[in-house]
Each structure stands twice: as structure tokens, then as C-alpha cells.
Length: 247
Image (cartoon, rainbow, N blue to C red):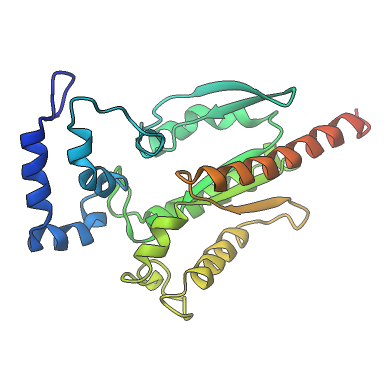
């Protein structure tokens, strides 16, 4: 890695990066970012680089929200909201990690499945022959039809809607789904199509699947989604405690 713990971003270096970003070739390269797996948040930090380089810099909420740390192991988090204790198990999404965590979901109240809308034109880092959206659909199929989750509600988060709405104006959904015949620039129509693709994987007509269109960096959006999710989870807990046992 070029950047390490001893790296220091000087105002002079930041100024040079700002000039470089204005170059036409760099701008065209950024439009093809999905081809070389540039992080989604990179353009944001590029634009803010002179602010980041100031001696008195303190990260804003957005700076923190847009930072990314790859999940490569199982991470368990507990938090309390209105006297309700929530336990969240975050797992590694990489293919090599899946066999390590699938068994953990046997007794969960619900499964939250996050899929990036923005990844429809991107490839897996582990296998560049596989489209990210196709991989998400395959994993979703495996999760919702697993016998362990027969009675477990699934919360489908179609994330990064902000980036998706930007990208769909220049890169058609047909690069991933050749059967999409709708308006190539209508984000809502494209999202509805993607949602149907995920729902089509469900083999159990009684299965509860709740969809949320999310933008993880939009705190208002996430607050609304979280309240909705909390109600679903509490309803499920009540059902679990009042349903007579079959044993």
C-alpha cells in the first residue's frame, strides 16, 4: 500500500491532486471507475481533498459515513433502542467467507440482506468473470430458500440508490440484464425491475420479504428505514413468543 500509518497529506499535495482532477483524461477515467474497482467514495474524497489536508481538519459526519472497512470476519454488535436490545451479526460478504457464517443464522429474528444497486455494471474482486449483481442474486437465492430460514423474515436492502441514480443516466441496466426493455434512464423503473429479479428467487409464497431502498450515507433515510425495521422485528418477536410450539 502506498498510503500507510506514517502518510501525511500536505496542503501542497492536495492542491496538486485538485489540479490533476480537472484534467480531461482523469475525468474520463473516473467515468470508467467500475472497470478498475475504484471505491464508490473516492470521488467524494477527491473533491474534498484540500479540506482534508488542512492542519485543523476534523472529520465530518459525512466523512465518517463514506469511509469503508471491508468485513473479513464475523462481527457482533449490541445496541439498545427504546429499551429494546438489538444484536446484529455482520458477516463477510466475500465468497471465501460464506461457509464460515451461514450456520450462525439458524435462530435469528430476521435476515438483513444488503445488495448494492450501484454494482450492476461491476465485477467481483475475487472473480472478475462474475457480475456483482448476479452474485448477489445467487446468494439471495441460497439464503431465502435455505431450510434454516423457512420461517425467518428477510429484509432486503437495495442500497446505494444515490449512486445508482447517477450511473443509470450513462450506463444502461441492460449491461447486466439483457431482458430489461424499459426506459434505460428511469431509475425508479430500473429499481422495480431489480426488485422483481430478487423476488423471483423466492420459492416459498408464504415467505416474508420486506424491501427498503436505501442510501447508507443519508442519515434521514436510514433513520426512517431503521424505525420500519424495528417495528418488523418487534412484530416477529411477539409472534415467536405467542405461537404455540409444535414440539
